Amino acid sequence: MPTVSLRKSGTGFLLKYGDVKLALDTGIKGETTLLSHSHSDHIGGLKNARHIIATKGTFDTWQARRSNKFQSQTIIKHGDMFGQIGVNITALNAGHVLGSTMYLLEFNDGLKVLYTGDFNNVDSLVHKAAKPVEADVLITEATYGTPQWVFPTRKTVYDNIMETAKRVTDEGRIPIFHAYSLGKSQEAIALLQSGGVRVISGNTSIDKVCSVYKQYGIELRHQTVRSHNLSETLDEGAVIVSSSSRHTIDNLRRTLGKPAFGQYEAKFEYFNLSGWTIGKFRERGFPLSAHSDFNGLLNFAKEVKPRVAYCFTENGRTLSKHLSDNDIHAVPLE
Ligand SMILES: [Zn+2]
Image 1 (cartoon, rainbow, N blue to C red):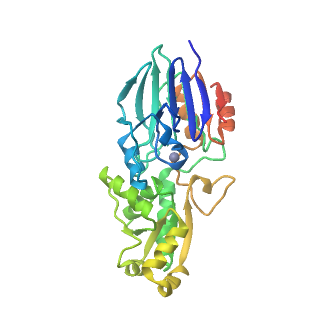
Image 2: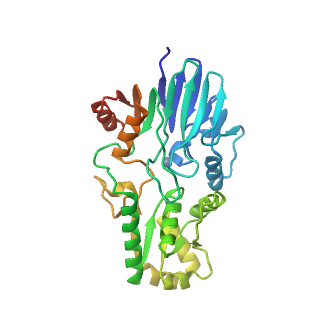
Image 3: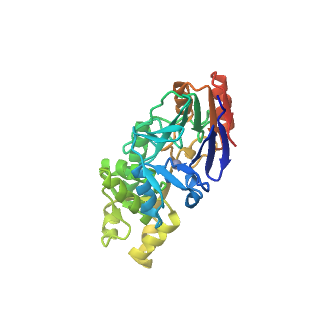
């Protein structure tokens, strides 16, 4: 049996097994790319790719924020298999953002490889949890792969965000929740509106991604920062979801006019929505994460039952050590 070769390349990896070569989350000249999702740290060099395989959700969220289209692409659905010479590729839900995908590769000799991309093993209001499948080789993300990152339950995080949103607005101030534009902002908007709070999106990029989520049946009711009745909404009590404070501030200043903006600016209170708000990078905010926490990564790997696990991202080394302590031979990919 040949061995799996994995080499770091751009924002992802080049996988080789026998005669099969696949680029994972990166574009390599002449090769096919398996794209897990459209966050910027997974899409380097895609213009070089010969062919790109991804879900419609991933292509749509890509397209919403960029003008260029791919020359050659295949849309794959979760649960469906795509056959290529030497390997069958099955797309599985990764639970991270809309369309996010793990890929199960089944080679002709029976070897199974699971590539997770970024994944979340808990349900959120807008994404279903990723479920493990057994494989001989696991290539797993390790973003929160150290024991300091153990998140509270989703419900606890949701309750804490809502409690703060209501308290701050009741006090006549304006909470601004910082969340990246694809995935986290939509979860934040869905949560805040479900609690009866008026939500304003602070950035066009959030609005563009929201319009894709709506096409996929996710109900998002928010006002944009360019709305003509913005000051009335702020006066009645509202929260802002922002993916870029600088752009949100510019947008608010433009819509409200400079003198009125100054009065509102004094009321702003900022919170981050990110896993990085706990652990050693303590920030003001709430650990709302689109990634699995340390226990999630560990338990997921145990259920995959791999003969070898490769761990990528900066905590790959630490997660590898903990997987090895749990009798899973693991290697960091750096
Ligand atoms: Zn991501």
